[in-house]
Length: 149
Length: 423
Image 1 (cartoon, rainbow over the protein chains, first blue to last red):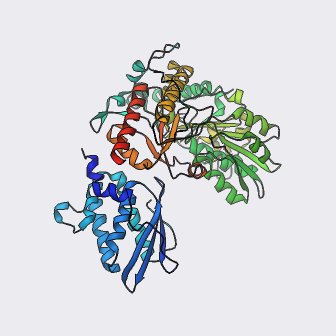
Image 2 (cartoon, chains in turn blue, brown; image 1 turned 120 degrees about the horizontal axis):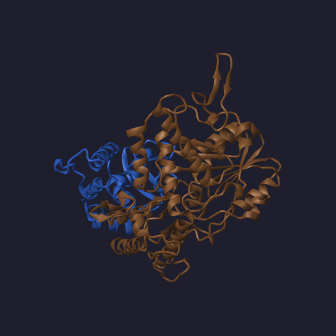
């Protein structure tokens, strides 16, 4: 049986309580909206690019602890990365959470490894990936809101 | 902040005056012996679907083991036995709803399909451009979307009668929305998200005074409230078998005979015809006109067994037990710090919906699951209700005849644990 602490790691609870980069960016930024219709989570991701480099990224919205912490740590991690690096990181993150990569393969997720335990709770994987899907939509300039369904 | 009325913590596991004994009842439901994450199952998601007694599980297995054959066709013995059981279930449903005749009972896949059937047959024939369909602000998506689709197709308008902050229908406001263009009123009997009981009889009187028919969505009401379609005088009543201890995939459309007879058929196929040539088809009489194709025979027989089971316990005794549980839960859960009850109507049944300060329903749902407690978290297929209360989601505990005060204590302890864990 997976223990709840595997999902609700200290770092996750701390970020959920005090999310970083929880704000809107100015009119010169891109933004996209994400929605998880099953649980009602909503998030808006704001993105400012300098050439191909992520100069600033932030989020707003209402969601569960997992989605807030995931959005918070995502914004911390992405700042300064190129769009290619960001996409690769999301792919590794997604593969880890959906159980396609065993942890022993060292997916090089850095701080994001705290989310590996979410893979034991299939009903919650979408909570963690919603901010990333929304980020991707902002990166590609999609107008339609992203949904997890 | 707690908005719940604090009620005396009356235990409700005692045997009531009606002789109802919850511990005896629990032995009829084999799934209640399951453990979840190493804990005894506490199943409080009955508004989503109820568990099934042995009587239902056995009736379905017995049909497949002993009687399986197609109905209304064969001269052979098995077909006659299957037909007999199928039509016996229809008589049970007729009595369950107090319909005048068995021909007023149509078997469908569930409440959702029943509403779609009425929208696509009665609705298409009677709703035109500029006409109006009236629903309420606390409908399940199943009683919104079929009418939206119809209105889109016909250029008609969907009107919505409002509710107050307690989650009660504002009947006076509904009356104002009844216009010369209103072609049908479609309302829930019992809100799945809030637990409010709607004064259906009153709404029917107001609508009938203007010669407007009324459909009642009884998906939530059928397991909790005795239903008498003649007393309600509604024109259509729909419910799903799986919420009333029967199998999934089977449900009922009740319609007044004259209405069903005047409606065009919905799906074409076998059993709904009396004769077919390539030039013309004569449709079968009701209810068969609306039962095209081989139906879910096992489902109908299972539903019949579920209704026989409910009859044996007695819906009044069930309602009494659940009412005591709901009052106990309202006091116990409503007095937990940080809990806000959503849906505080004076007349409620079966459902306790709530939100919590600083804890998202999804997190609470995961933590409760680890305690073996099954609740629903989310918008309960009623997003407009969530918007009305300005919340993304609620946690919903919903009760059935086999639930106990002990289980509500377990829920309360689970919520306290979640507060410590996430707080």
